[in-house]
Image 1 (cartoon, rainbow, N blue to C red):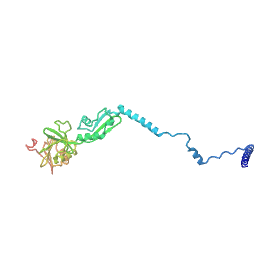
Image 2: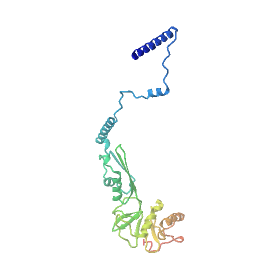
Image 3: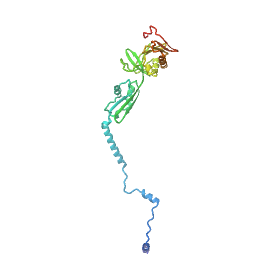
Image 4: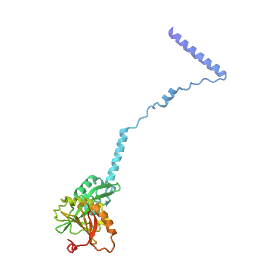
Length: 294
């Protein structure tokens, strides 16, 4: 009986629905459409991931990138682009171009990757006391630039017919019999001490002198032939124009600045003599024994 009841209910619903549709159609009316979706339904439909669409395999993409990147690097390393094509040295005045490159062990044709900036700096600074600092620039164009900053050479000292350059900090450079460089004053002492290349001079007076020499104008230094550091009394400075200047010990920079003004005030026809830059500035004539150079 229950089954018969269900069938009858379905038939009734179908027939009623059909009749309603026919009545609406006969009246010339349109059937109501499906109501528009809500905001939530629209959002869910738009962000619903389509079935069957696969995501890209990240591991595969990473492998491809690494593989081709490795090929590019390998090709670069095998090409001439990875070699040193040009070398340039800047800032060297006392040191020669060839000895800098030889000590740095950098040459054309070697791999750019084998140029170690820190290693080049350490080699040059340890090999040459004259070198104050080193900067190395390497470009992927194959260019290597070594910029050297040299310490200032204050003067020369003579021992056993050898010329030794003395740096501003008192370090003694390797001796040479001939020096092709700008004019530098010769530093002499009453009691010359031993000079050891790579080490500083032992005299405190000479250390103070070489420290002050770079403070003096280059035009004045070019006029100085010799600075004699005496054990007692004033220091004696022999000029290239045959004048002699006497100053208190360890006051070289200040007194030579004052000398420039004093010398400029003298008449042009003034004969060479002794210019005393002690407590008072005055000039006196040479005594016969002093005019001979001692």
